[in-house]
Length: 400
Image (tube, rainbow, N blue to C red; front, side, top):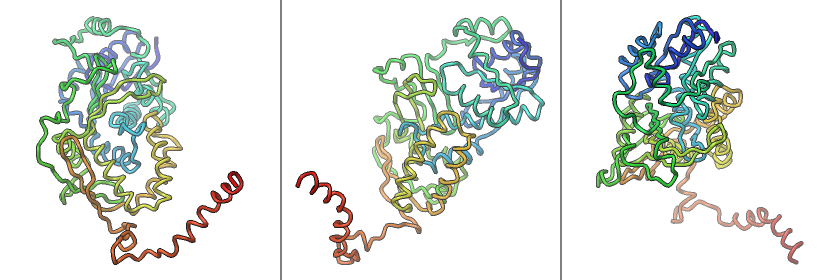
């Protein structure tokens, strides 16, 4: 099945993406396959992955470092939006997909490829995110998804690869499907498919069990400039270093675990385990700083925008007109979201215990119940009369 002459393939070094190389060549007649491995802070040694792609038949194997861009242009935008899908999941995996799509399109344009490919299956969210991201950035590129069409079991996929010299895993593979990047880890499948089965401690790598966490509390001051975290405890850090350091601190105190039933884009529910220590803490701290610096109406209205924004990211619409329009609104709201938030870590909890800002709308002289109170108490009676007038009229008409 001849679909393309030259293809850029998103490559992770796993069984599926490795088998994609001979499959594209033998079954679909692709002449040249260029692989692209994106370094988004997953911690893997990408040198061997790069070499493996060449052994599997790629004509060229690319490794692109996208950590800085990932943190700055994707994670920080999401933090400014307090994006939590279904009010829980901070989109640590979903945020990586539009960036990988962008890398694929850029590589395809640079090397003159007429298609890009990925190893996503038909039941997951990532196929939607990749396909729509690529489509939005370059609608002229074909998108190939062999794993969505080859209808092979895991064992059959491994056997197919072995026919072309792709070594099978030397040890029994983990029953879990795991994805990791700078922002966190997602774990699914295997025993976790039973919603009543507690996730075993072995699936967690970024966060300690509560029993193993320190007995003493740790305080961290996070400073934000226009909604973007820039320093920890007075030390200015770049985006990658800041997220990495906060991952260590929060994870050491057992902060950052999620166990949830999630509604996928394709309409099925899945049970997901997440570790996203820094991202969850930063969203919570950022939202708290907004409560100090945004007016009531902006803060309340922004909540509805945040929910829409999280759905946009989850559903693969990062490069969409609505996302672009909401970005403009969110960036406007962040102009005065500058200040410090103090977080206390202890035994699986990260609580905001202090906040301050030069742009704070909070006024101690209005809030106090002490002698310095400047609130006009006489105004309250008139306010309540006007505010309650519709209720008064309704009550008189219906109960009188």
